[in-house]
Image (cartoon, rainbow, N blue to C red; front, side, top):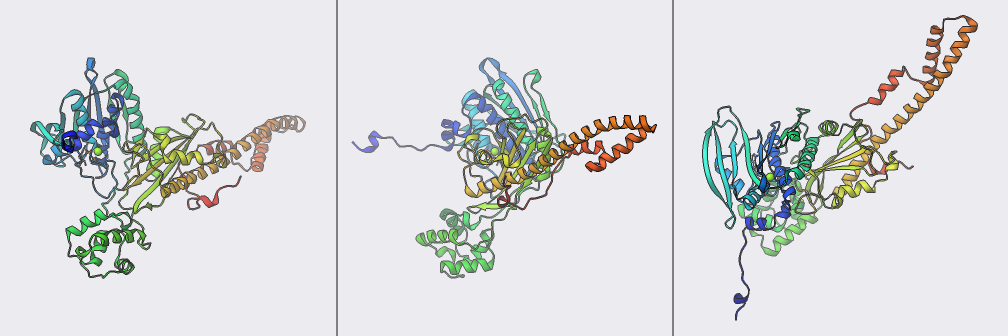
Length: 538
Ligand code: ADP
Ligand code: MG
């Protein structure tokens, strides 16, 4: 008996793989599935708007499609750039089909999210997804009903028609029916939208659920948007053998020098020549000549070589200190917020930027631990906080150095953007421990913490002054009474000159001045370039 008689071998299509393992893409149970489906659709909508400088307007309608079977219909509509007609079936019906496999910051990265929604709907309710899309300036709206042929990983067009675009609409609208538990998912979805608004205050969201009290509207609070990222080239430190092979195959006759300067980020002619010397090759050698072991050696040397320029950060789109402050202020309603956008940095050739906000007081409930809001490429991370590097760093910080005593009304917001986010798992919910990123997160949080310390110190001083002022004024009243009695002087005149005296002594102009000083808003960019070396030694 041969092996093939007792063991059966077969291939598995990507669609089938994800149908079987939907939990690794976040569709692990009916509550989570609703949250995940909405999240995937909303993130696609945000990518289709803000990346193209369109202020996002996103509508989400939820309804019970069949209450006895807990079927829920989800509708998400955006005002984005739309999808070209002939691409619509593939982007919703073929796992690993995307316009985002580029070196550039996006929310989507895997080319999977939309397909997971279709797969889940189809596996639970056997209904197709409805897609309507109109590209910019299109006279018509394309409509499809789609399913996925799971064994072939191909779209199945259930129906298709073209509608007149009477009002010049552009964007994409999706409707899908899936099994889920809306009443349980609701709070998560709302929290997700709230957090998304924190880092995208230039977007507006409308959510309407099936129940009376379900509607929420998150308005746009600013029309300022971050600059969209540009598309980039790989950095020599981030490549592997396979990528080099692919680049060589495109143009095997290219001389080595040109190959290096044209295909990689941060490689000018001078640096390229130095590198060629370092590897011991010739500048005019056609790259196609590099074979097997030479190739592996070439890539190893690329990683070892230390004179490449730092990766460029033009491929990134940080939120920016002002926009982040506006978003945090609007959502958390703190007394004050401090923000920082750090300078670009990199790990393994991938550029990244860390941003942090520290919100204090106001509507923030005091808690025994700092409340943390984590974001990666503007996507809120909600699950799996315990595994996240941000939680670790924030917990390591000795907050007493910054005059914070717990329970404290404090929230820490950390945003990491990169062309490659090192997620700790396929569920994309936590960021792995990469030393360079850890450092930057620590520096960012400390920077805003220092601003908080200054603020708390100033408030303490003001509090002290206020106390003194109150005591002085109390005694002053008695002195005024006695003086006016013996000298027959006008008590009002006495009062105003004595008050002036007190103010001069306490160096305050007026009581109102002192009181309104508490309500300082916005940022203080005072000590942004001193890093961990200058921590307070208390
Ligand atoms: P990813 O977002 O990782 O690329 P998806 O499966 O979620 O993967 O989406 C696949 C592709 O479909 C996207 O890359 C994008 O080109 C297109 N797409 C999906 N939703 C929209 C939308 N709302 N507007 C425009 N394009 C969209
Ligand atoms: Mg997506």
